[in-house]
Amino acid sequence: MVRRLLSRGNSVRTLTAHPERLDPFGGTVEVSPFNFADRSALVRSLRGASTLYNTYWVRFPYRQVTYEEALANTRVLLGAAEDAGLRRIVHLSITNPSEESPHAYFRGKAIVEREIRASRLSHAILRPTVIFGTEDILINNIAWFLRRFPLFFVPGSGDYRLQPVFVEDVAELAVEAGEREDNTTIDAVGPETYTFEALVRRVAEQLGSRAKIIRANPRLALTLADIVGRIVRDAILTRDELEGLMKDPGNLGGSDARLRPGGRRCSCDVKTEEVPR
Image 1: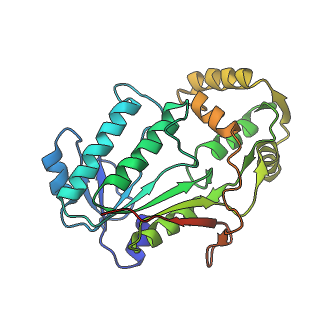
Image 2: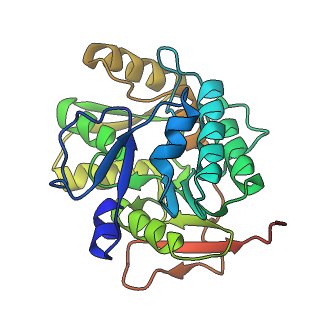
């Protein structure tokens, strides 16, 4: 997103908890620290901007940060954006969030969407499916396993469907959404639908992996992922992610799906909402 914003002549400021990290943009991006506990400082960091591109959330509870705290932090961020005079927020959500979901991750995402719609900011909410590209989680983890182990366990039947979307297309959609004025929700989905097992086999083929791909009880697959995660000190797959993955998302593109101009890798179903002001 940052590269695309800069290429369009925009000034970009990033809010980060780690301002000391190496700057990959050669000083062209202004860096401001943020602290959700200091709302007035957050307002100062946001002042002068017009659009907030929000990717903040937590993948799973970690240390002192729970989903509840992440939700409270998001409310602080929205309030600070309003106080700073921003006109618009572009928010990266997920496919099929629901406040009725049994999983806290999906419930929290749905509540965040509701809070955004209730704010004074105009908004675009992007709901990407499985994202692939540099530093994505799911597909890079699949590739990591296929490279290193002789067996790959597909949880359950493997026939649940995905529509992977390229990270660069999501970034382009986000930038385009920031230039609009309407309140909109966009299902950002790729043009191709795979079953999970077919996707794994496609990745294996691209890698030249000889790993044997077999179906396994989801609990066993999750347990093995947890064991490997403890060894490498990383979360490979969470229970919420697995159960969300195995839930059929339905036909997100639908009959109104359109291929984004110039982007063969991403189709989008755009839903425009009329929200009272």
